[in-house]
Amino acid sequence: QVQLVESGGNSVQPGGSLRLSCVASGHPFPRLLLAWFRQVPGKQREGVAGIYTELSRTNIADSVKGRFTISQDNAKNTVYLQMDNLQPSDTAMYYCAAFKNEQAGRWWGPLQRLLQDDFPFWGQGTQVNVSS
Image (cartoon, rainbow, N blue to C red; front, side):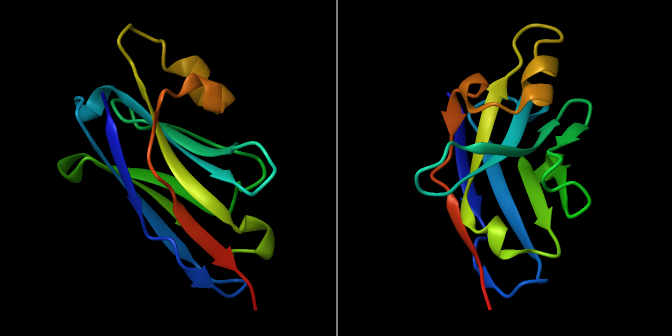
């Protein structure tokens, strides 16, 4: 099992920034694919960004490219989502999700797709509100 705990959600004005954190435990950190998803009521979860921790390979969704970045701190078993120039359309519950890479190369597809069905482990979410 992988346990995930998110933090950092808040209310900000348009143009502001936030950094979300996700602490992972229960599995060796370097063999995890960790991703951020977001969801608004009535819609499916949207993949925002992912990182394969062993190689620091990342993927950022086109909808947030240029504004969001994903990074990791191996010493803290933590993945971050830096969100800049936030817009009201970014308002959502943000979730951290994990995929355990237990076979060489299996992480590639889930990282490219960023689909919720590829990720069996989820955190509880942290709320981001962007409004003036």
